[in-house]
Length: 173
Image 1 (cartoon, one colour):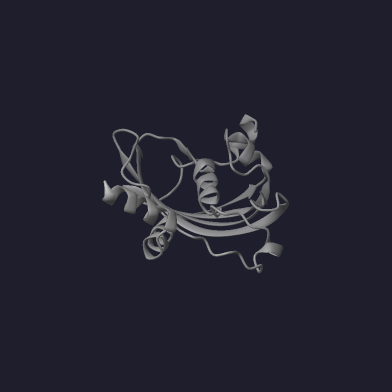
Image 2: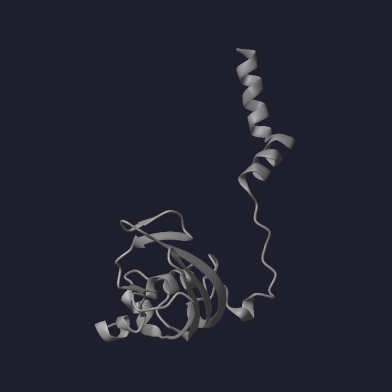
């Protein structure tokens, strides 16, 4: 992604009046390729942003509709995964830049602009499931997993006869 494409996500907040403003962004492969070690390489869609500005803060409401290409963990086939996300970030004005929480960010009073590309990328990335399963395989039955606690319970219920024989030898000493 070159500077021009990154600039498309830049919002000049210095000249914005204290009211709600609307912005629309096009999401393409280049946004995912900008971030090193991205879990997504291909995707396309749109982002609508309502930015409400006041004297002391801004509220950013994101509506993201995108389809990303994922690789199935089981079959290794690629498939398109739709993501529809609505998120909110509050940006307060202060003396320095820092993060109060995941939803509240403080920026300098004299900041001329903000770039929302990273927020959009993060919202999309966080919406990707841990287990990526091709839609054709979702209806298949998966074997029940046996957890270690269940194995231990089974082991306590029925003792292995070899261990019983060893216990007898130990007790006879």
